[in-house]
Image 1: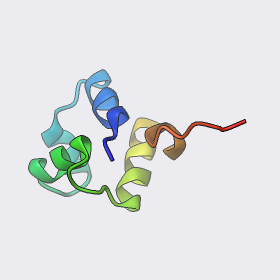
Image 2 (image 1 turned 90 degrees about the vertical axis):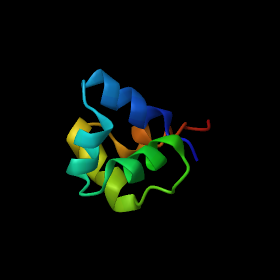
Image 3 (image 1 turned 90 degrees about the horizontal axis):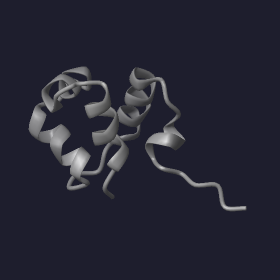
Length: 67
């Protein structure tokens, strides 16, 4: 699954993939794969990024309410 919001938030905050990878204690290539959907991002990383960007996990996951 491709997480468009990961890249959007990162660029809005003027951060590099390397900087976000450091926050997650992983290397840049691993983070790049999360961002592109090549590698599944772990739940703990989604929570950590939501806290870092001060957004909900639903926002990061692009959850849409079905009414």
